[in-house]
Image (cartoon, rainbow over the protein chains, first blue to last red):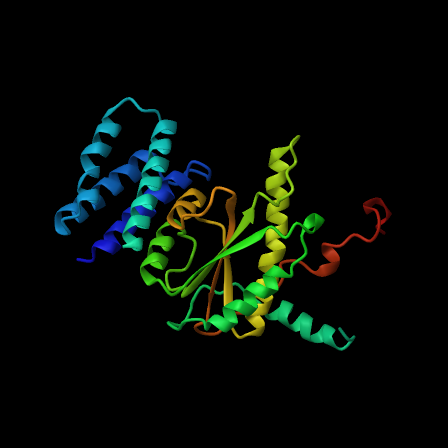
Length: 93
Length: 184
């Protein structure tokens, strides 16, 4: 399993999900977050990736909260930036 | 330029198409430099010359990460150029900040067009991409705060034939000579 591919897939889901806020809604943020959580869980366990492994529980907590759709989009944006920061660290090493 | 050069210029304009399928082949650096040079010579409002470029090709890991934040870029694109606006030099409309963004987009679109025509004349294909996460790629590329990405240009050797897509409307259907009310 190529951890970089799984990581990039998760990053694209987070970035693409956040982008939906500006564009006509093709997928609600809850579905984007569920998808991201599933892929991150897979990547975390199959690739022993700590960054990915930490996400599912965090995402679940956010989804169980009473966050509005707008707040969930903001959360996707925040996740996207975290992926970008982590990607910068990984590509620099 | 001489009068006879018009045919060559129009040929490049007429033949250029957005290319979304590329060969697995790197773009030589000397050709990338020619493309950048063409962009550098584009007109800009008040001659601000605020375009800045990030070129991604050699660092494959970085390019793959980049594509995660630039989902509009075809997966097999071998080279990506981010065209950013240097806000330290760009025109700022303080009364209407949104207008500043429009002016930046206008300027950098002219930069991109120069680059696309140069690339085409070098046997390369290009595709302008606007579907991406600006914050994501700026973070990934460690872009300084004053550089704001406006467009991404994918560059590579085209794979397969490029379809000749006709214009949707005839030229005379989209042109008004003088005022609209004077049309016969």
